[in-house]
Image 1 (tube, rainbow, N blue to C red):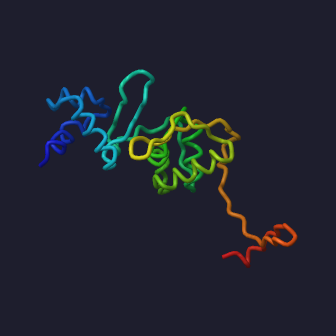
Image 2 (image 1 turned 180 degrees about the vertical axis):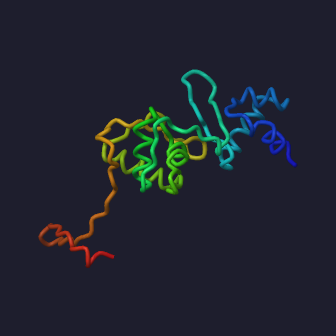
Image 3 (image 1 turned 180 degrees about the horizontal axis):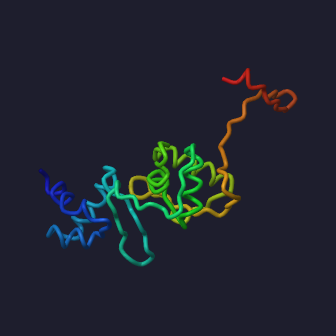
Length: 176
């Protein structure tokens, strides 16, 4: 078993931990503990639970999702994600997927990313923390809370005629 795996065995039972706590518990240097936390995050074992301004990031095991008070699952991924967005002050796609997996509805991180991007482009969300590929995810905040029913992303099918520069929607039987 690698040193990183041994360290994971020591911290995986904690509800939350910081790099400093990992270093103290395992006896490794702070830089090594930071590398462990990043690797656990990339492996899907841990997630960033909190990013307090001016303080160390707080991690938690990925399976240790704190339930949101008053959250009632819906029958759709969009419905669950929208409810989570309305309850949390800010969230990443990983947070969104973790909390929205409820009531028999499966939400992947990719679905959460796609939904967040769509709502971002429609003006419902704003970016609080910019993503850095391979380092951290974007963190969003809901700014367009229009009510309890979730906005649904739709794709429109139709025919575009470049001669007349016109778009005519097609009826459902012609959509693939």
